Image: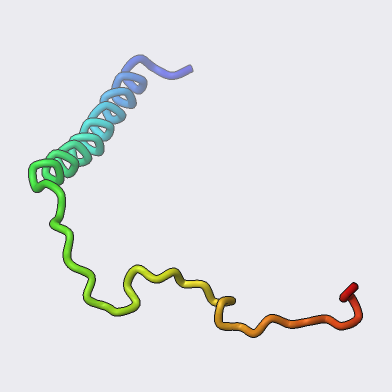
Amino acid sequence: MHSTLQMAISLLVFIVVYCAVFGVGYYYIFRLIKKGPQPVTELTSQTAGTPARPLSAAEPVRDEENAS
């Protein structure tokens, strides 16, 4: 069996690590919220906004054997 002291130390270490990890996470999230959203930049590329469809440039293949 475990002693009470070992269990208390284990619980204390768990609480300290838990608070440290989530404390850093809260600090980071609140810093991002305080900074606010980034401004949207204008699209400068001529291809911006066009879909990237790789097969649209390919020639259609006609299979004469399966044509009915």
